[in-house]
Length: 71
Image (cartoon, rainbow, N blue to C red; front, side):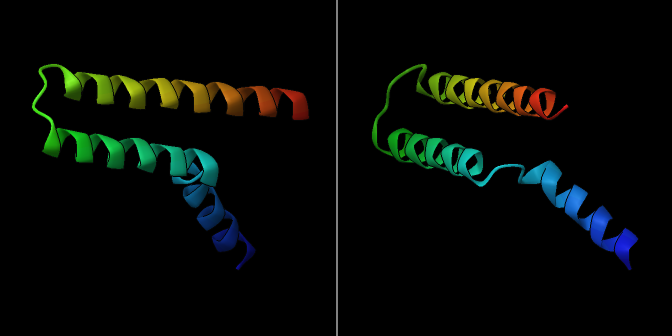
């Protein structure tokens, strides 16, 4: 039973490592969806995709730094 709980925690951790970062991703997606549905500007989808990519890089580096500190 411990194995299943540990495996489940690892799988969930892959998708939801940090609730704050997940919230930021959802906020970017929601804002992008709202803007793209209301404003017709060329390149706006690229800006939303770039914001998501930058957030992913930031979250990954933050996680790597935290793991390096823990040792």
